[in-house]
Image 1 (spheres, rainbow, N blue to C red):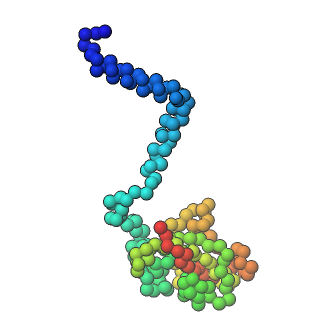
Image 2: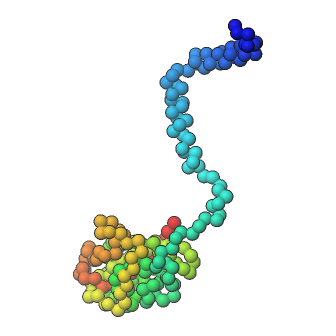
Length: 186
């Protein structure tokens, strides 16, 4: 025994040794590694738990697109009407139909492309389904080309360059496009 050792040091050593031996006698290395691995895997999930954050109430609004900054909610016959942020074609509202209805004598396409448009009236964004109306020649009254969120052709659900008149059962001739609100965008 060294002169600097005292009874407290040896008592602490004996207590530690006793605890470690008791744990070692009850568990295996695999058990310790399993519990350690479980703890390591569980730690990142704590970040996913719902927590009240002080800054949540002062969240910044999403960056507005150039179209959203100039969009209006009064004139359905103008290309800057808020629902037309991703429309490409003739407006059915100017061709005898409505914003979300086809003109008489035409049929809506069974498929559509989608866009997310900002409504300046209530400050919310909405999912819009754009459908082509088919069966008659183009009316060409008001033609708009807006490209908010437009995607390449290999992402057809968000591409406004495709004529969607296939599968209507009538003529595949394009007439105009509608813009129906599907629901609020998050």
